[in-house]
Image (cartoon, rainbow, N blue to C red; front, side, top):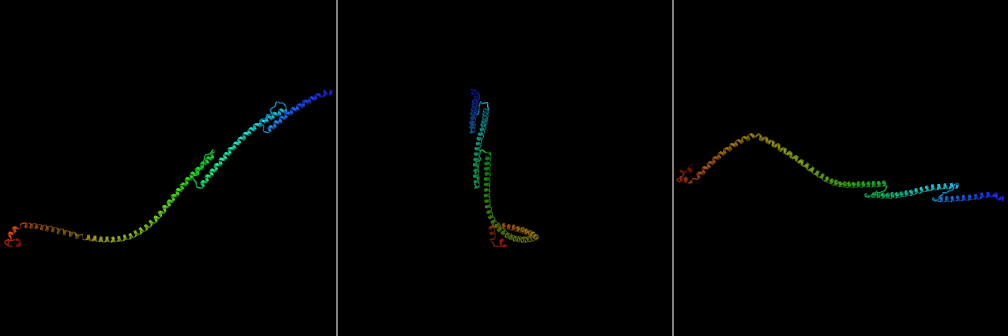
Length: 274
């Protein structure tokens, strides 16, 4: 009885201790299970507890850690989603750049093959690529215009060369004609020179003749005066002959009277007496 009384408090303490230990062990085991779930990625697990002992403090600490990890995980997930979106955009842009590069390469190959009408599509969401496409097309426009001008100039030069060749032929023919004309002119000049010498001689002779005429002008004047006088005398004689002819015609108009006068013989007729 005494032993029971002596060991009863100890036994009670032992029971209480065992009960406390079991309760604490269960709480710790529960925290361990939740911690393992958290470690496995279950961020929805809660460590909230009403205990005021060390186990409760540990549970609250784990709960704070769980909230922090949940926040960090959410941020990480957002960052991952953003990174994935950015990666998608980068991949899309990379594909776009690759496509544009292939198009530009094909256009440049066409230009290298002589197709100056090749152009690229400058439309792009990226301003740099759009500007590059427009510049590329602008360069091709200028190159096409320049080549067209060069071709036109070459055609004009070829035509001019043909005209020059024809002109050279014409010039050669004209040169031959000029040579012939020059020869003819030289011969004509020689003939003209001879004619000039002949004319000069004739002029000298004419000058001498003029001098002789001038020297004899006095004689000519006298001869002219004499000729004038003779002409006057001739005119006077002509007038006299005219008068005589008139008288003779008048006499011929009266034949009966003369006939009667001459009927007795020539002694009575003046015509016979004369």
